[in-house]
Length: 65
Image (cartoon, rainbow, N blue to C red):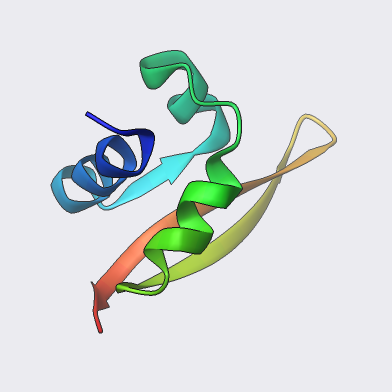
């Protein structure tokens, strides 16, 4: 399965994904590229969070286009 398909399946099943989850579960280090490609097909929002003085993004699948 391609990286894009892995991320798409994850978002459809769970609704959100972080860079850490993508790396830990699938070994994907460039999640933002997969999200960029998937945004052509889905409405995906970026929600920024700060934890432990670090900023990170959670991508959330809103709906299909």
